[in-house]
Length: 341
Ligand SMILES: [Zn+2]
Ligand SMILES: [Zn+2]
Image (cartoon, rainbow, N blue to C red; front, side):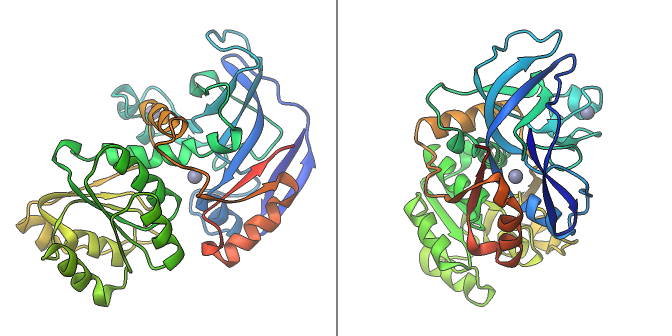
């Protein structure tokens, strides 16, 4: 089978490899579609702290079960599926409490283990999630990033949420806009420097799009809401010192801030506002099974539109060019999906 291997920073090699054999407890998946993530781009550039080549990238994928290893029950060859790419220990305290997304030994397919930019991949059967028979694979490859957004929202007290600010209108932010709108959040503001993405956020359900410019941020908030700290909650999908600062400023007393974006370096936060306004700040990492199921169902039901997020669909052979293009111009595509045939 064909696979794309990141052999060194900047170098993707398409190679032929033997068909993987599913071990005990594994399922062999024929990959149909695999999304390209910012994580893959960072790994390609050689500036991801926890990924080092050689590795087959790809963790946002959907395909068909082709074979089952010994001891696997409840799955059927021929079924369309997506896969949770997390490899978790099942023994540590977070795992035992059900929060395996923060497993002490967490590894991710396509990052610390070979991923799905390949014709076939053997995965743990308990990480497989079924798909509706008529769900397109390209669409299903967005379940994984949508689950990231769903999980981030699940970190909030949704019953107390009528105004939400989402900072950053990349894939995670735009998926979060739609999930929040589907959940009935009345007022969704988005902050994003790129005009095209602001417009898309408005089309997908945001009520207000802010420029993200720190000089005008406060004024833009005051203009719409009469005060700067007007939001019940903020999802920071960027994770920069600038955006965390805006998040803490924009949230109302007693409100919540979720750090979703991966901070590229340590950021300072104005603790006085956290203390004085009794703000809550929590992190969000990946997702667990309920988030995957919710994301799948919302996409299938059309509550989350994926078509407008998919900028390009490319064959596996072009992965190297796709990653080089995104490294050069990260804003050039919202989501690029790779297909295997
Ligand atoms: Zn991803
Ligand atoms: Zn664990």
